[in-house]
Image (cartoon, rainbow over all chains, first blue to last red; front, side):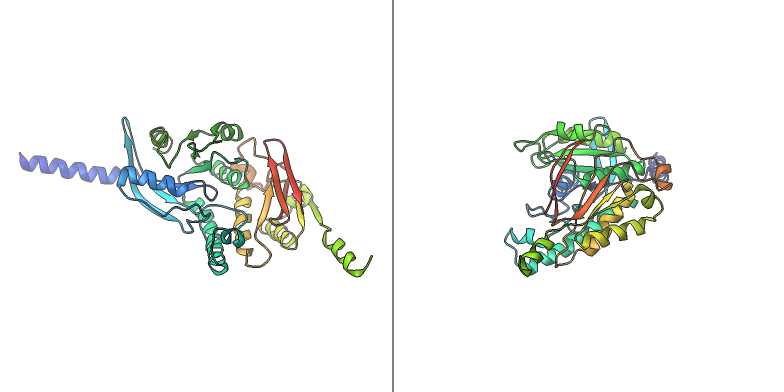
Length: 211
Length: 125
């Protein structure tokens, strides 16, 4: 009997391995300081108990792509396994003087600017290797930026699924309606990655969109 | 007007290059990017009668990052209206770009004041 159960388990494990759906590779994109890494940390903390990177109010804190594989997001009635790719903030301009206004020396600011330009290039190259994107926007900011337009255009051209995350809804002046009005063809989920507001809705939407 | 005044006045002149849709249609992606960045790094504003397609925009950002150095060039300001329709893969293969007028300039000279769905306000300094 025990042998039969063991054989059944082995067969089940083998079948599971052979027919297991490949985890979707999901990139977290957006402009600097939109809260991409804060969101990635929240997701990972909720489902793996770990974080992926440091956060800061100085733009371009994340300057290298970071990746965490096989993260299972599950809740009541839904489950999806993702490879999560946290990307550096996309920008069309990077001025080292901006970093000096946060108290950095000129040398530190120039080094950060150089690394930030490399990060933008790396993030763009990753667009060719994704199954979908979470585009994170700061709900207190103007959504009609070239970065947002370019990311959305690239996902649409590749016919890849995308969700817009209207982040920072905990801040005064935040408006997810402004984002919905700007990109009405896409699903917008308003959240606060910082305090977890609406995060359950985001997980459920991620599972239905990327599962 | 002395020599210094003339120089100051000349320095405030800003050249704007308007590129026609037919010229853009005949160019490869790299030729377009080279043309744009050559102009913008020289302080000129470029107006494209027909915008870049999404992949070209991404490549333009990538090549802009390669041009940023510690000196005077900190990147570009690029503005066009949001796309109303999803671009088809076919239109991208045919290099159609899209029909949105696009303005590109050096980030230290072209500043967007306000951008809405149908109106873009910018200043050139």
